[in-house]
Image (cartoon, rainbow, N blue to C red; front, side):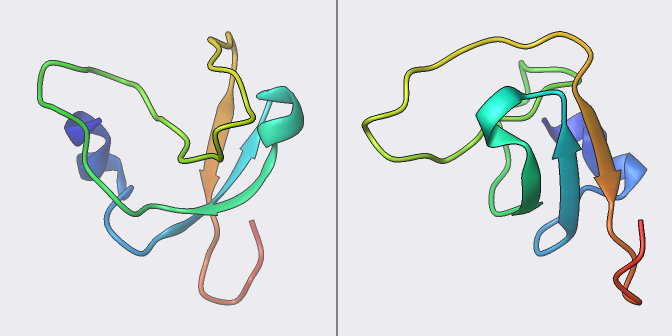
Length: 68
């Protein structure tokens, strides 16, 4: 969501996601959500994956030197 941009989640930033089950891993920020959403992320996945909601998901920005 757009409110997370102030925390550094801007276009092209790589993040490590944990706590989202099979969606855990390294992702790249590639879009902005509608401004009505707060403190949320979404995943662009293929049609075979079902949507879901997770609690306690952790998103960490990966530094340029590839360390968390």
